[in-house]
Structure formats: C-alpha cells, structure tokens
Image (cartoon, rainbow, N blue to C red; front, side, top):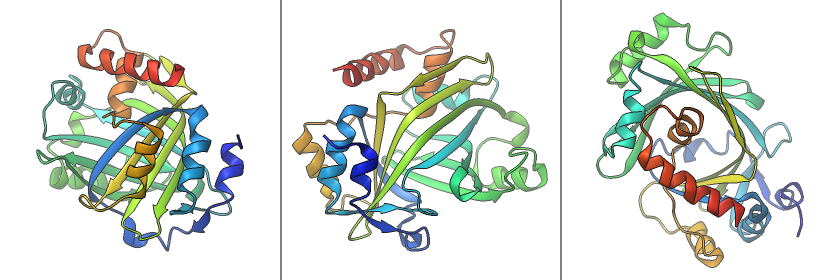
Length: 252
C-alpha cells in the first residue's frame, strides 16, 4: 500500500484562487471517521474525481485553531444537549498561507451550516477588540466580553475539490487538542476526520467511495470531542458514547 504522501502526488492540483467559487459558506456537512491506515486507500479511490489544494507546492496544510466559549461552556452544552440551532466561535490560522480568520459557524434546524468570517492580523489573535466586538455583535448571539479561550486544536489537512467544483472534502489528521482551562493535552495520531461539504444534496463521488469502503457517516465536532477528552469534570454523557465508537473505529 502506498503512503499518503505518495498518493496525493497523483492528484491534479488546484490553487486557492481557483477555489474561490467553492467556498461553500452555506452548506450541508457530512462527516466520517476512519483510521489513518485506511487513508491511502480513500485517496487512491478519489484521485480520478478530485483536485487537491496546493499552496506553495504543499499539498498537506497545517491548521491552528482556538475555540472560544463562555465561562459556563454554553456552546459546548448546547451541542451536548442536542440543540439543533447552535453556534461555534473560533479563530483559525491557516499556517502555510499565513492567513487568520475569526469565524462564526451557525447550525440551523435544517442541518445547514452557515459560516461568517473576518480576517485578523496573524498576531494577538483575539486582542483586536475594535474589530472583533462589532462583528460578533452583528453575527453572533455572544458578546466579546462573554468569551474566553477554551480549546486549541492543531492538525494537518488535505483539501480536495471535485472536478465539477460543487463540493469540497477536508481530511484532518495528526489531531492534537490542548485545553486552555487546565492545560491538558490529548493527541489522536490514528484518527482521521473526513468532512464532505456540499451546497445541498448534489451528486458526490465521495458518497460512492464511502459506500465502497463501507464507511458510515458519524457526526463529530472537533471542539466538543476535545473538551470531553481533556476535561472529565464537564457533562459528557453523550460524547462518551461517541468517543468509544471512535476508539473502536480507529483501533479496528
């Protein structure tokens, strides 16, 4: 079996500029979990139907994200308690392209994810009060003063775009979570999170690939799983079941 690095060299590349029309800021997300040992197989099956994002010759990007929440972990708890309408607030650094964005992700009761964002300087991420506070007031239910840094996530990402340019596929691995309250760090090197992002139920080569590989959809939030993994004092009944399922998948 070839390695991940070997397989992604067989893809046709696509640049950030060429991906401008595939932002999908209002979309339907479908998520999967696979062990890293199966990633080369997935990529081999996808090579004919997808481009791979390439930045300065790199096809594996580095991401660094800080999630914010209230003192009472309201956003985490809304997800845990199965609220259909909810938000996530994060600052994400696209390390290789040196871009930083403040992002507000909103999930509605129809399963669609809408994302609004603004660019930030790549230093002092959340200290730009004059820029961040008005944006949050307009786009979020939370005020700047309510929020504190909660969870840092770092990972590697491969981004694929289908040849019809109607969907994006993100493949995240080498995941590391660091809890900002207690300093606990957890890594899951064998975990791969695959997320299919489409504007509605358009045909998707990846859906067929997942059927061929017998991989089933698994709803997962990197933020919520990170909190549950690093802080056993918070309510996490629902996520404990999901974590056990993830462990079984990646160790099978």
